[in-house]
Length: 218
Image (tube, rainbow, N blue to C red; front, side, top):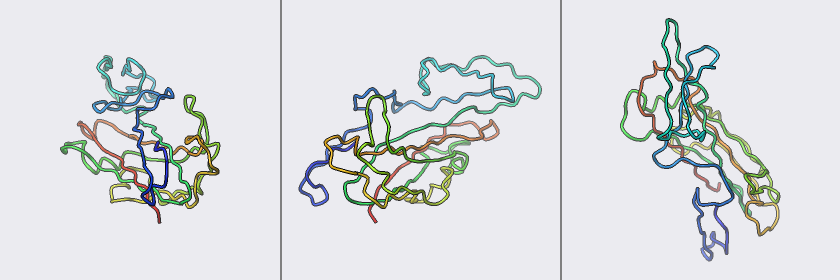
């Protein structure tokens, strides 16, 4: 969230960033720099026998998390369970329409799993929530959807590996009316990503990737 004051476009105002994790509305816990998403595995066709224990149920890998013992039998097929991660951020615009682009890239050294081709198996989807209440922070009451429309067919992170893939447009301003409450002038952009079909044949390793969003005026 960036409080708007003055007129930054003309260079006469100030933009004071408020960084993710510093707000106090009681948001859910977020990952630290050294945490990863916790994968659950099943050894049954219907995915009911999970042998991952998430000690604090936060969905991230912590020191107290464990893999419980499992017995491998003839015909056992290991597969990943729910591996999707949902994220969101809030956006608004005062008078301008704009576009949103996204780029995905791998980080760190390459290994059997940490390679650019692995991103083809990481599904990706996105949409907006025009208004709602997030842990006590009401948003969207003084906003429109900005004419939001999806562009292209970006359904995996592998489709986002080129520079600045334009994924959405907001041709109209989002702010509906003047308001002292910035969240009320904002809408929420939601995106989800994760392995759709991962099995051990894809190799072991540490897949590290980054999704970067950019905003720009046409």
